[in-house]
Every structure is written in C-alpha cells, then in structure tokens.
Image (cartoon, one colour):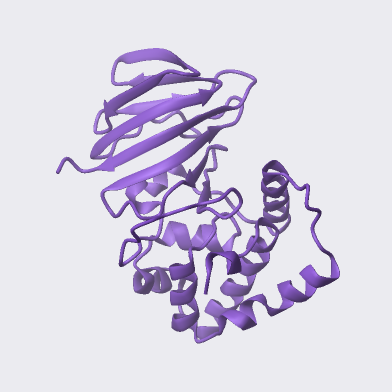
Length: 243
C-alpha cells in the first residue's frame, strides 16, 4: 500500500467510524487493540473519532488484527470519489475545516492534554524507521486537544526519542483547559512561525513572538497559551528523556 492510498481528510471520519464498528464486532476493546498495535489508547480513540490520521503501517496492522482487507475499508470511498470529484483548487485549510465539521457531526471528542501524559504517547511508532520521511498537508497524523490546540506530526521516522511537530494554538487556546501546568521528562525546542504565545516555564513568564525560538527542560512545569485574537503556529521538536 502506498502513501497515496491513505485516506484524504474528507474520508478520515468515515474510516474511523468503520474501524470502530469492525473492532466492536470483533469483540476487542479499544485498549486491547491499542496494546496489540503498540500505540496509546488515546491515539486509538482519536483514530476512531476521525481526529487522527493512520500511517500506512498502522492501517496495515489494523487490517491484519481485525481481519479485514484494505480494499474493503476504502471501497465505498472510492465509489463516492468517482461520483463526486474534488476540486483541484481545494486548499489545506478547506480540508482541515471539512475534517473538523465531519468529526463534530459524528460526535467525536477531542483528547485531554492532561490525560495524554507525555507527548511520546501521541503517535504510533513504526517498528522500522524509514531512511526518508515526507509528509504532506492533509496526510499527516493529527491530534486535536480538548483545549483546541492541534498537533501535526511532520516526520514519522524520528523513533521513540524525538518528535518533530507543528503546533497550532487557536485564539485564546491554552495547553490545558484548566490552565494546569504540564511536565514530562525531556526537552522542548520551538520556533514560532506566526502569532504570539504566552510561555510559562517554572516561575518565568514571557511572550514569544513570531520569529523567536526557545528551548527548555520539559520536566519543569510549563504552560503555553494564546492570549490574542489571532492563531499562533509554531514548529516544535520534543526530545523524550535525557539520554
């Protein structure tokens, strides 16, 4: 299965609903499937709710575990795609909006950042790292927090010790809904592409502007918040552990 066989943003929600139905029919619990795949239950929940995109390896493992073919999963979507082709001029923002609106219609819930624990639990991990990783808008692993914050995985061959992600903070969004500080073993390094973020690390509080960068020990309690009426977007590297 090649990368172009992955579901488009418009198909992710339907795929999630279909996978959930197949899993429930098999009698396996969400946690059992997550354990078999080597991913977190929170990621599986995001997948079934149409809030996250499966990689080729994850999708293949799911079909093997649930005893269903990839062709069966996408047969209906291919028919619909033939009947209603997508406009060539469609933008990334349009794809994201469509994903969000369909997820809301399906009753999908966002994940709590506090419940996620470490960012290391956010994504499925490939057993064998590819020498090259290329990700494209609308085709990346994507997590949406209950606070509105969005993470997109920019490379999937970083292994278990590192994550390379895009972070998006909508207006007035914060890392947690209750402003609780976060901490996890490792380091975070970030570059703000647009907007502003209020950064709290320990007792230090400052405003980060577009074009500025930072790095901090993430075992120190920290919180990121967008206090403005504009979207804030940055590129983040998260190192897990101190090795």
